[in-house]
Image 1 (cartoon, rainbow, N blue to C red):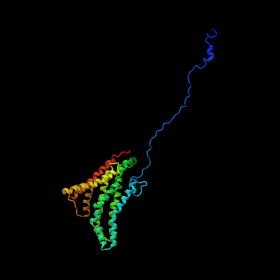
Image 2: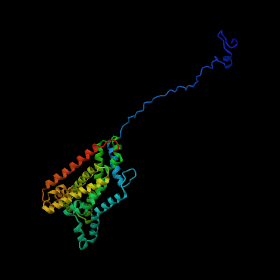
Image 3: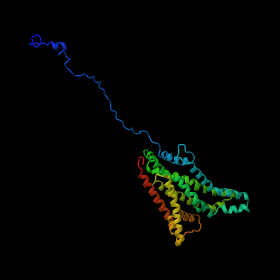
Image 4: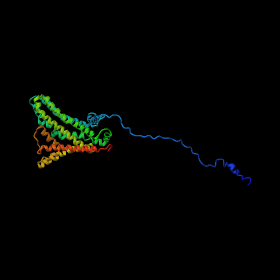
Length: 337
């Protein structure tokens, strides 16, 4: 036992053999520490534009150009389907077809076939009224179809595609947006309806070689028809845009417009046939315009109710349509619906 123990506090043979006390008794692992990484926090915000903005008319003209120029070229402008463009072209050509008849009349001379064509297509109160407000074929097929194709997608396309968010995220207010949509639609319709009316009147004077006396006699009638044409464009544009603003489908807006024009006309016609009363024609936009147009060009009215009723009816239709339009545009969010 004396050889195995070290009473004085030394190490035993076992401890000496296995190296006890030389630091190996610490059973802990040494883990390498990563170097400290210092990160920076940056404040990221949108930097507002400090420069000068373009004039207000430039922004508005961009909206106008987008819709009007799209009829001729889709590159960078509103896309019109080729069939829509073809339909607009056909309607326009058909609207100026009386010019061709007047040209044939001028070739036919004063008698025979030329005189017949001149009486049928020449300048008079009924022909000037019919060029704008004649029911067949213009207000039965041409003008309503033209309006449905042009105006139907003006606002509904923006709602469906989220384009309104792009407009309102820029310095374009809702008043300018609505005004430019309205002006774009009215210009396209006016080019076909009003411009063809002006071409018809001018061509009749030139081809027939009419003098100043004829011009003085017919110019007041021409101006009455011109006012009637402008009123038709304004009314159809108001109704069409109002219906376009309540839906995301251009098809719904187009069909709804045709339903308003044809439906009110049909209901009023059936009521008149049954009860011999024309009062429900006040609900028909076309008949209200036709009644006012008859008064403007000085032809006898075929409506029983007073002219003032039709005037109030057209004013009320436009007011309610514009009220609905502005209300719907004001409710559009600066986000995609």
